[in-house]
Length: 174
Image 1 (tube, helix red, strand yellow):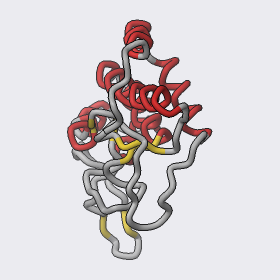
Image 2: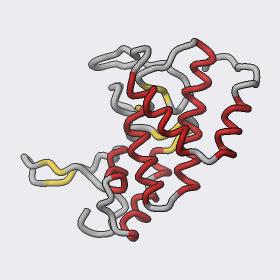
Image 3: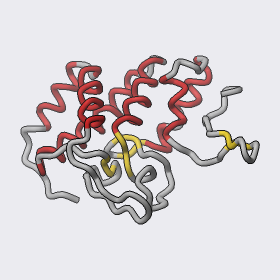
């Protein structure tokens, strides 16, 4: 990480320069426990770049590929949220976790499936991929596992809120 920079970027060995692409992996040093308290606080400020109604977006750029905006993937949500928890940012971790869990639960109620990825902007399982792999696979194991890990880490009040949400009538899919 070097210094207390706001962002953590990939480094391109071929160009001998860091990337300027803002990506959810900026939270990984928190999950790995590699950040100082000052660095962690700086990284946390990235939540505004990634946080949407349904969780954390992969990036802030919509390039039409599946590992980009507006999608959120369970493993990256889990690593970012666990990283926030590890550095004591419980309120942020709970809020983001709840958003993603609520998105998954709402879509499960709507179509009876758990998907590989979710559109965290529309809180849906819709995917409109323009380049590369364009499916949204049903029954993906990492989503199931991340859902349980995130759910079990939520305080009881948040779990109760999520359970209550499941009793409300569904709205039409976006």
